[in-house]
Structure formats: structure tokens, C-alpha cells
Length: 94
Image 1 (tube, helix red, strand yellow):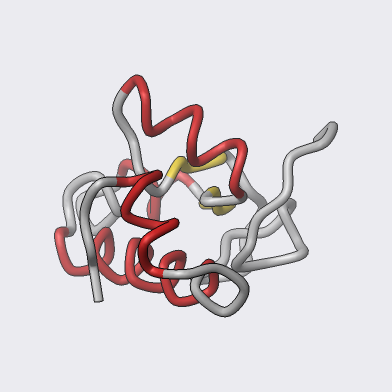
Image 2 (cartoon, rainbow, N blue to C red; image 1 turned 30 degrees about the vertical axis):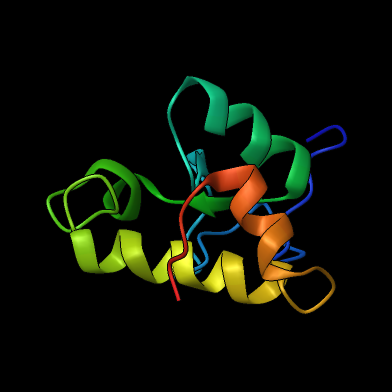
């Protein structure tokens, strides 16, 4: 996996929802600029195909997507301020 780190999990080899083998590293805050921010700050999670791009996956399930965004922000704010988060992402999810 190289130097990739997630602030949500230490196991990047297993889907964080079901434990199946990871098939994708999901950037929680996506888009061109936010992909880099996500990578640099650990806003990434391992997902199986179903939880990534399946019908109920984060790309099609707004509730699941929002859950990950909130979880990353909560974890980030344990060691940083909300202002720092807003400077990175530009939106509050909590």
C-alpha cells in the first residue's frame, strides 16, 4: 500500500463495512482538489466492490457517503480544529 494511511482504520486490506478483501481505496472527499486533500490527510477507506460502486455502495448511497464524511471529520477534529477542517474541505459535515 505504500505510505497511504487512513484516519478511520489501520487495516487497508479489508472493507471497513463488511471485512471482505479491499478492491478499492475510496477518497471520502472526492473531486480533483479534494482527492489530494483526502490522500494527504488520511481521508481514505478500503472498500469491497459492493460497498464502493455497488447499488448500495458509497457512490450511490448518500447516507453511507455522508456517514464516511462525518466519521472522517470527527476523527480529524480529535487532533485539529474545525477551522482547519473547513480550510481543507470547505464544508462542515457535523
